[in-house]
Image (cartoon, rainbow, N blue to C red; front, side, top):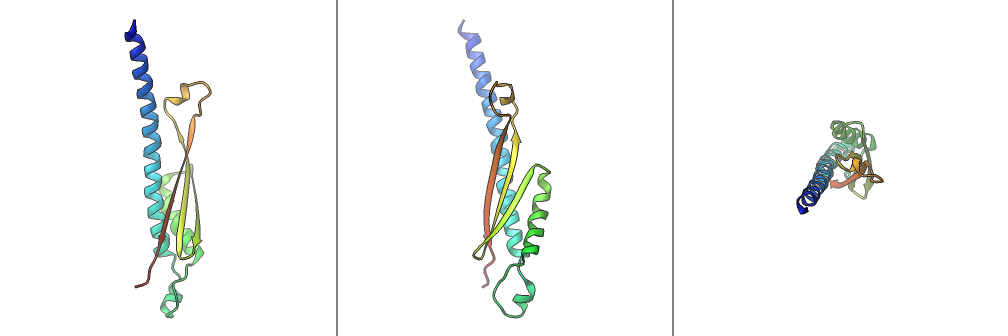
Length: 126
């Protein structure tokens, strides 16, 4: 009598583990991409003319946006990217909705989870 209940519980726990692995995998991918995008934007977004003229490090928003879009292009259509300049730091925020595998079968449960990642980078002149 207890064996069918135990099998059901093990299957349920396995389904939860698979869905959490999907969420954590997507979040890990977003974090890595956000870090790469912030680093690329901090390096490629510098106003080269100002640096060559001996001035301070200034960012060119068009160059930052292009660098972030290049980095995020590999993630696909469901990802939204935004960036801000906070002082001398470039802050990149990525958001994506992740489809769950087994939770779709549970009545009333969400079919998707929204995953976000934020990364910050700055270029320091030595």
